[in-house]
Length: 154
Image 1 (cartoon, rainbow, N blue to C red):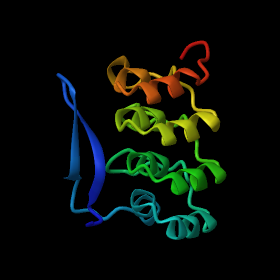
Image 2: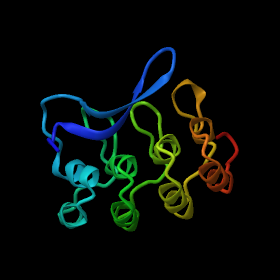
Image 3: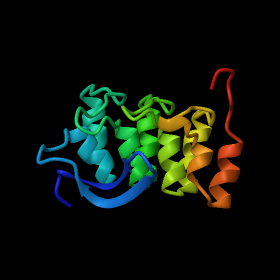
Image 4: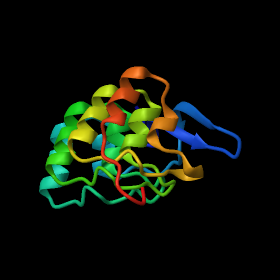
């Protein structure tokens, strides 16, 4: 896969959310931490984290964190590693989506479970006021998300 591609990305429009596969964002190469997270390459990802790269840094182009990329690709080991290195499971992308929004959209129960076990909150609102529960129809994912914490003001 070319480094200027993202395996899965949600494209937001005025009327709906459309999911596109292998969408080119730009010709700009992803920073190594985002490339590793997107590919599920835990060795490269850990090397970046050990260098002190902030796991909560957002990619300038996409506005996603390494955790968003790992969740979008359903890379369980990368998700666990990022959580171990204190990735914020409630960090919002520039589009106001948390990693749990991505797990719901991509209908990934395992990723949703990992995020919730690490403290992800289900009440976080994304763009257009959408919550993670609004983005999935898969019962297994909905059941997992409903177990997550909701805090006042979420």
